[in-house]
Every structure is written in C-alpha cells, then in structure tokens.
Length: 200
Image (cartoon, rainbow, N blue to C red; front, side, top):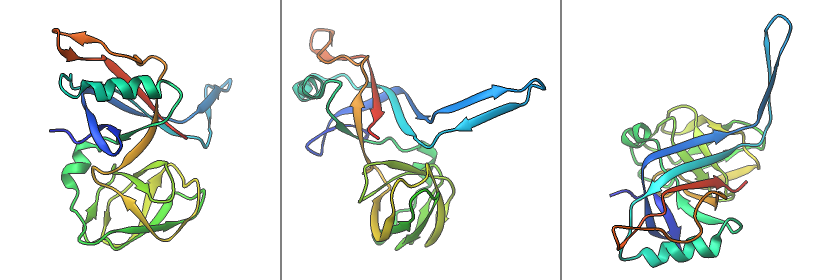
C-alpha cells in the first residue's frame, strides 16, 4: 500500500496512484545566435509540480472532499512527497537521526549521524524550512553531498532532516483540480487527475 498521498492533520487521507508525473519547474530562457549557438539563462527559483491520480475512495471520502473544498486553490495543503522508486529501494536506513549543515545559495550540504546509504535522487526536507530538495549524488556515511536546488537559507549545524517516506511537501491545488467531488460506480469518489504545485 502506498504511503504517498494527501495528508490532513498528519494522517494520510488519499493515496497517490499511477499514472504520476513529478517535474521540476525552473525558469530557463534561451535565445539562438546567428551561428545557431544556444544561449540559455537559468533563474534561481525552482518548485516541484506533481500530476497524479488518487486511489478511488468510498469510506473516508468525506476527508478528501472537505480537504479539496476548504483548501481550494488558495490555501496550502500537505502531502508525503513520492520518492523515486530506484532511490527508495537502495536506501539503507540510518541507525541514528542524520543531521545536516550548509550555507545559503550553495548546492553542498554536510551530513552527520548517517550510518547508511542516502542514494542520489532521494528527496530530503530540513527541519528549518519548507522547501524540498533532491540529493544529486550518493552519500555513504557522513560527509558532503550535492543537493538540488541550491539552499534558500543557512542550515545551522545539527539541523535534522527527513529523507524516507516522511518527507512532507507543502503544496497548493492547481486551478485545474476539482474543488469538490466526482463519483464513479455509484459509491466511489474519484476526482480524476490532481495537480499540485509546491509552495515556494
């Protein structure tokens, strides 16, 4: 059973189902010269965007219904961020709580308290900020590891972080997501494709 989905009060009320697309949205502008050389310019802001279906609900459908209507397209809501399947399978859980340290606008953090393998492609979230980051390389034990995007704020030494199925992302429902309920087969609530954008 999937542990990834929409949360209400820290409890999973709707599970993500396939097909699912998780994309990185980072503004890039480009132009071509007369010699057809491309000149791309990348901006600093970045957010994750998720497009997914939900497992149809019967009992418990009222929780999702209220969440959709109350949050609408204007109030933030919470999800457990879906980890990359390959990274999830390679993850070797630490025996202690890992912590990190880093500096604003850099793409390197220093991990401490890690006795296992943190695979590249793993999503992490630090205790002092809402932004979700991705590891750019494997980290076996303690030491430096690259992250994407660059840190938006300093991480003081000893900052705890989430890295398993507990990474909570703060999102908004996209304007195309139904703020209500749709039923199929009489008793199953299925709102179709849900689009979520990370709050940045």
